[in-house]
Image (cartoon, rainbow over all chains, first blue to last red; front, side, top):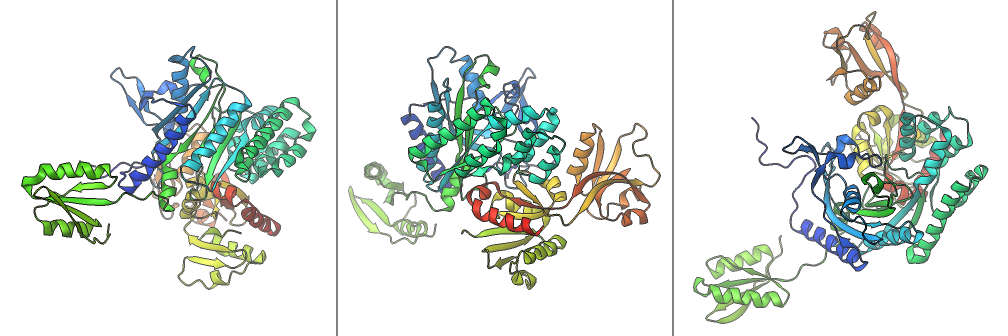
Length: 406
Length: 208
């Protein structure tokens, strides 16, 4: 039998050195931000019952989840998403807790991927959930926090794109079509497939169908609101006006929060069979070909677990952000490295010296080689500039002049 | 304006796309005299053109290393996942069809049918839509051979004129879907380079 003992599975990978450094920095910047804004950490299990993710409003695609069984033969999945488990946790463990509840998480999610196009099946996400509030203030808080999160990661050139699932839901309910057709229409809007969308909608001759056909084209800056107003003028419907007005007022407030120039609108944001019920948004950076952050309001999800609570939140894809930072060289400089050498009988003193050096903020490495000559050539090879030699209780510093070739 | 990068499917679609670009008034002399280079430049608007195999066009656009791509709907159906498919360019028209040995009744009997194809995903999802189990055999070359050799009951393949089918004793049982060249756009690119990409799309639309 072929043994797969020297490679990692499709979608999984090892990380080393600066890859770990930058990822840790992103994670700690984000946790620091979230906890400074009064979010407390939650950690949910790495595997859970399949049923949790099969609730009526979440419906994550079954074929994207890693499955296993427990000893009783019950179906488990490796956590495919963090929001659904948090909804479960809030509806059960935090029942009756004073509202709103603010939680943050930084954990991996797992997805089945083919592996042939470099997709990752293990994605580190850091995000927040603000539960128990349906006010505009809570939407704005989460949106500005998402923008701040990207900023704190060291990405200044980001964009936040806003949409509202209510517009699509309103229109699609108006044209009256079956579930399958509905999904076809939704996926054409999502992929901005104007041609196929036009064909699909040609059978429906109604203002709602015409408006749906225009949805994917309604994206861009503030001018989109005017275009939308023209498009939806004929409906003169209170609910629709309310959604449009709300989206616009959120946009305006965000502008005043210092996000002017960072904002975009896309009326064609319609995530697949998602739990979202209101504002939805994505964060983009130029270094990544897909959104690096996404989130929105999901007022129906927690009800699936027995508590009716409004909620909103977002997650940052830490892996994409880290890759972008590595690529743009935005990695913080590492502290100076010092090599500490001694003869074997002075090991205790040398280790004491390492403790002192550590306090002064340098990275001190204990030299386990036998001779000073070996130590010098090792320092040169690995780019260490300074060697501390501990000799008869004294510390002597040698300039190794190491060429950084690492 | 920021530089745009577009991936074109090498071969017939490339020729058609270059014709379209020239109709739009773009200077394609670098592509016309490309030699062996794979990245070529169009001076106005500032565009890098990448020549690639069809499936690779999708990979490049999906990952964002290319902002746009021209690729056949056949390849999109077989390997596509997340990007915007914004324009039907109208050329490269053909169809996916189910072809069977002339005179045979593909849907007759209760045995599981076997389909030979270069497009396993297309074949599977077509029959899945009919609620029908099939065996799929992936063939790389002339798919028409498989039913002749008795390996398959039918084929799902691209059909233009149907001549190859006829010469090999096959006939079209039904059409699966229409195919033509599409302009696809990376999701983040469309958002971050909206103006440039939309201008470019509009220029194309005026020539279609």
